[in-house]
Image (cartoon, rainbow, N blue to C red; front, side, top):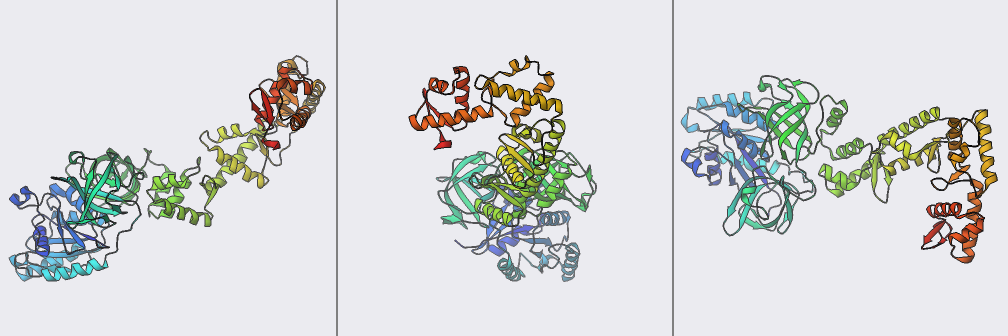
Length: 636
């Protein structure tokens, strides 16, 4: 199998001699259908081999079959643009040129056919007409060659230019993930289902498993052919035929995709940039129903213009397509739009987000995001993916799947972004990454929330992390919050005390009355030792208004003076520490302890001793094993 393969496409008005030219160049008649031969008119895509390393796709020139023309032109490397010398420039000449520009075809050759039917002066006049038409287009500097498909005059010169273009065309960029738009599906007796198309990216071998999309059906590659020759492997840029197992021909449509499993996802929503041709004639309004031509597929859908209510001819804008059936596409795929009825090409552009979600117009943040990634530079796409995910750190596999990028490439891009200090790793073990801009924003939000909390609750030592999480966003990742809090603690902007968080320079200031109440409560818990009162009992002691009592009680818990060891059991810190010391000493001597032994050890009843033991279990002081407890991880 050749290492490189070129796909050439034809373009031009009906009956301008495209198929006859291909037959003269290759010896093959690309009109394969009985109807085409009877009518003398190409109605669908035709194919012919030019030498060993190029395929020519012949497209129909009739306005009724423009959808087939777009399907054929969507995967070509350069174009053979055909104009008949007797007709000159015609409507589909202009429309085909518009389509090629919208699909970003960069190179081509212009062929003036039927020179044997007219005088030389007419040929020169058509050449001049063509030069005017091609001004400011990719064909402005292209050779213009006059030929006769009847006599063969000029054919050798066309071949010479074709050979030259074939050597100059750059190979398609391989993204490392296999993808192919199907343009033909048929059955060969004894072999079964055959599909054909151009490999847009990646490589496959006989025996590989692929995914048929949008059906989401797994198929196996039974055989491969390139230029009617069996091969074991095929790569980017090659036209090939695949004998597949797992899908019947009748379930496959032109425009379906064969892809490496686990990357591409069908979607009814596409975010894209759209350029409206001057020839559109009138503004395009939001929610207009259109025909979207993407790859080898035509889909109906509506366009939502995100920046304004309508788009004027010659203008460009960010849009969302809301399609009536799901389609599979990739970042930077080119597309063409045509009016629903009567059908006419009016614009096209680039897919920016192939797996979008439904959005509203006039979202400035979304528009800026789409503008940044429009160039489709992978490093920008990865950075934007991280930037858009404020609540969640991202894994490499998630980014790889969402952007249809190879995992190894994403790893390299992540390393580059870390080196450029644009992203950070918040968990090396789990490989979680977060954008630095979001990190700085999250820190600011945390500090603002703490300042507001302290203002409203001056007697509280701090805000619980759970409350802080809910205040910022219930969807905020817990590990991300923890990482950010530790970062703020290292910067000496916050202090962490158990589950509580406070600003670094914050100090509780109790009013004299509340301060006296705090000392009175503490004194009660010091005197009661291991037989402490519950909150309801405390209320009956006449210490002051319940609102104040509740505030001071919470302060003592937050500051760690009192420790809650169960739903209704609170002890002074001194006694919890004393109980832990006695318990550890006992276990080091006896290896295990029962509830009754611990009860006697601290001189308390079971209702006070058991909650303390459960608290120690929770804090890794002890481990419960059946009816006994042994020394926990904290002291091993």
